[in-house]
Amino acid sequence: MLVFAVISIVKTPPEPLLGLRYRIIDEAVDTWEGNDVFQIFSRHRYSFYQTTGETPETLLDILRQIGNNVFQNDTGRPYKLSPRNRVMLFMLWLRSYPCYHMLTLIFDVSVTTIHDEINRCIPVFYQHFHHLVHWPSLNEWTAKMGNWEKLPMAVGAIDGTSTEIYRPLVEPQELYYSGHRHFHCVHTQVVIDNLGKICYIDAGFLGHQNDAQQFAMMRSIGRNAELDFPEGIVLLADKIYPKRYPLMTPYTRQQIQRKPDNLKRRCRKINNLIKEYRVTVEHSIGELKNYRVMGSDIRGENFVIYIVNICAAFVCRRNDLFR
Image 1 (cartoon, rainbow, N blue to C red):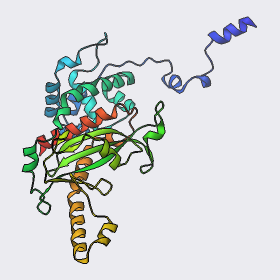
Image 2 (cartoon, rainbow, N blue to C red; image 1 turned 60 degrees about the vertical axis):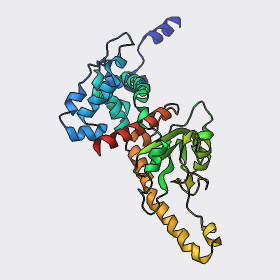
Image 3 (cartoon, helix red, strand yellow; image 1 turned 120 degrees about the horizontal axis):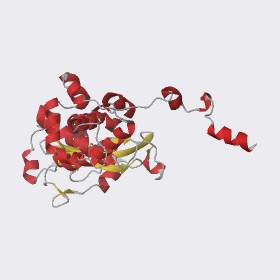
Image 4 (cartoon, rainbow, N blue to C red; image 1 turned 90 degrees about the horizontal axis):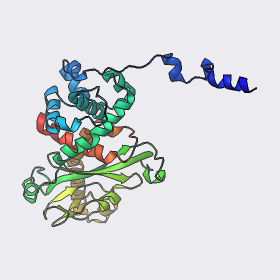
């Protein structure tokens, strides 16, 4: 009996008992050589732009701003990808959000390498580009008055967006579940000026919180507050936000009904103007979600804050470069 037990342990189990991966590779060893994807893709400039959000020249400019020294070998083994291909890998992941196995086939490196490279790039890109999203000065805010002619005191708008995440395995998952969205997510508050440029972004709010609760937890906006904002001008917001300075929200149906007849029409007109101008912030959020990593399931809510800030920084950068 002991002999048969030893034989059953040493002998390879029948083929049906093997995992799918081992049955497919049939004892072959995967070899990864690494492709120069940048050189291949740069021949097709428009497809390059669509998949990465950059041209070959602007992507190389990103590499120059980061510097080759941040891609020093810290693993003790040679890298399969050159620095420009590592930057392209990360930009391709942000913009198109393909699965790791798709990136493995494109770059001819292992899934583990893809995972390590992306996780290594996230803090590097955040450190070098998050400053592109900055809060304007008092004079800059005041200079924006009048860009919206029918609401000259409105210099910008605020709104929220959601980024879906996988169900948390460690933290209480009910905190991240949005009853309105019907999925687990992390919320982000976005402030834009009346030209559509993102001026401030605050990510990481729990999924069960609404926009009003998120606004209460944000850095305060106002005169001599954390985010200094002039008096006499306002930011447009949705009905759920508190109706107080510096926000201007639409009148509710009950508020309009309590108004005298000669003011009801004026209130409805103001509501229509707020709705018309707030489209600008929706368009800015749409540009943010052109980076498909923002609109897809992200595994690990801890990375969302960094990823959202990186995407917002590249939206501002693209607006300066291509407009």
